[in-house]
Amino acid sequence: MSGHSKWHSIKHKKGAADAARGKLFAVLIRQIEVAARSGGGDPESNATLRTMVQKARDASVPVDTIQRAIKRGTGEEEGVVYEPVSYEGYAPHGVAVFVQALTDNRNRTGAEIKNIFSRNGGNFAEPGAVAWQFERRGEVMVEKSAAGEDDLMLVAADAGADDIVDLGDVWQVTTPPTELHHVRTAIEAASIAVKESDLTMVPTTTVELAEESAAKSVLRLVDALEDHDDVEAVYANFDIPESVLEAVNA
Image 1 (cartoon, rainbow, N blue to C red):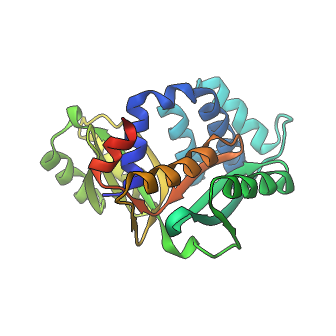
Image 2: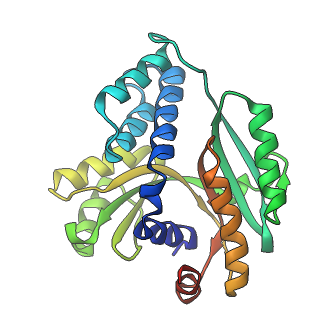
Image 3: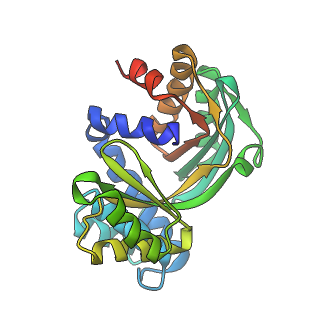
């Protein structure tokens, strides 16, 4: 099980997601604008935009806010132009970190991300240094109260899903990136409520952090990166045993 996924599950339980609601909305709106600018404003013909709009709906972003973001992306309304950019580096203990951001100033954002790595014991790296350690995947989150594992597996596997992972209160259904929308649609068609779905980066190898001090040092960097206003997602290849995660959480 991905230690990174488990950590985010715990953060959601602690209410960290609610505290960051304002930033979440801002990131989702930027994602919609960028997707509409690069592939057009019709979610039916723009798969990336369709995914971003679904993420926004899952997060309860108002429909009119979503529509305005699409119009800014297509140029129908004026707005700041954001562009996607990625950064790579290492956290303490050799943990690979891949950062995705949306910015209107690459130089400023790059300098600030580099500073976050430095201040938290990490090392900023050149493009391509760690990206090869991750692969693009789709994921669909389903509350355990919505379906049992066997029922969910049957529907998801028939629709093209790869696996189901137990993350405590939720099932994480993983899919090929091209099958994300199809798998989510099939699950919902089976009257199983979906909590959220997204495209993500999954590590191909992991670094186990068996000591509490090591886990804290890595999570400190990850949290600092996630708190940056321009960062939309942070992926890392750490795996923290559940007992250590519980100690860190306490």
